[in-house]
Length: 261
Image 1 (tube, rainbow, N blue to C red):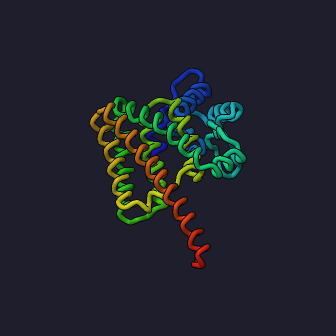
Image 2 (image 1 turned 45 degrees about the vertical axis):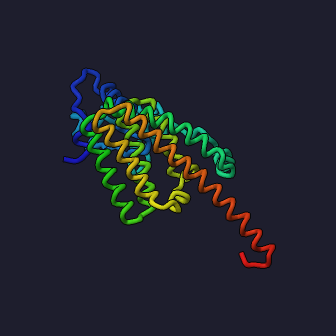
Image 3 (image 1 turned 90 degrees about the vertical axis):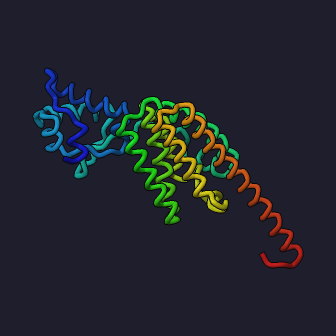
């Protein structure tokens, strides 16, 4: 039994096409089906939902007309981009040239992720906790192997899983846009953090503390641990930026004294 077998429910509603639409809409709203997710083939969905293929096509056409599905001929049906982008490419470039904006980004994340962690501690199901534990294991593996690219992916997946575990659909979709910026490297990289002795271990400990509070149902502890984590990231980047500026000035002094850069 694959994942698709477990997320679609058979339809026994009088208005079959409408019931299919409603079920898929509900999974989009709840964040089960995220933008870019490929739906099973028409044959598979017809069998999973126990509806005729003509009724399924009617439902999928309805969802496409609403802008919720994108049909790529030869590839299949995909959940359409839903949250869009809050910032234009030109404005993203502007942000990238002005590092001070990064701290506004962290300020926003601190509040939203603390809120998400608090809700997750109250609402996370066992399945949510299992997902979080699996990602934490992956983070441990990437830390030990010094696989920085995989570590960044695991880091984003960890925070996104906490947002999913909040079971707040608005938060899930709003933060998806934020994490997309992170994945694209607009605001976040681990460059400075790598230069701090023991940073990998400290970050893993912080993530573990957030997860454990969620596992324990400790909402206040989850909130505090999430804030402490972002505080550490902010302090590390401030110190890293200051160190880089000092090194740049020192190199210029060295050049003026006749030394090589």
